[in-house]
Image (spheres, rainbow, N blue to C red):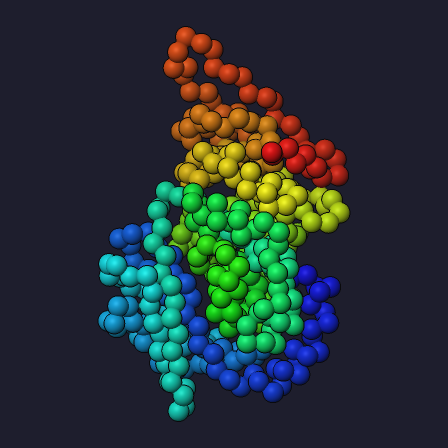
Length: 350
């Protein structure tokens, strides 16, 4: 969320917090797992706009009508278990009772190919031109348009990559975010939300932690798409190739970033480099070999026949060529180009 756009919302938000923060809201986080592996189920009971969640609540976790575990919420209102997922299962249910109120929420289960790269996509100002009044103060967000071409581009990407939606929005906005994504034509994917409302002004801290937590469960989260320096740092600190949606004046970003002006260019980048990006082992090797100098690499190499086994970690600019399959000489690759002083401005993906 851009601070300049959210500043005007602070007063009504505070007033609403005074009147409505007592209502408990239960949320079941989305689960991502590789087929045949156990999964970590996480839920929370929060008070809208509150600093802390509801502690000490007994929670049931249910998959396909069968209870797979129970847990008690901690001081932050969160509870988690690890359990086996019966086949087939695409959702689970959590239930809890607070006083006389019975709470229930449903979470989604995504079973992903363990060889495929996952891409984190920031929500606010990257795919959503967010109206924060509508987001925080209405039942459904009808006012926030999507960023031009973003649904089409993300749909195309979803055919080859796992899609994760990342936001510093508090967790109790999970269902509202899910509905907005569906209404605007984005493909299904797990949504990562912050545990507390304070994340709205501590985005980097919370996003960094959310990404690290997700990568512990699914290490193939190797690419992030965002629109600002907060995203650059959160992705970079998690050793991820970063694609920045450039929407305003040119800004200098670090070497792990590729900066592109619009979602059509972003889609083209992922299509042109699919053989290296979609294969998680290959991309992980590229990131390691190039010591996060990824802008130079992706703007300086043809990547059609690169095998991760041939990458030389000691040489951040070299990729060994496979043996030629015919008597013809293998095509030469252009020399890597360093970004110019003042930031990268070459948007050369057609």
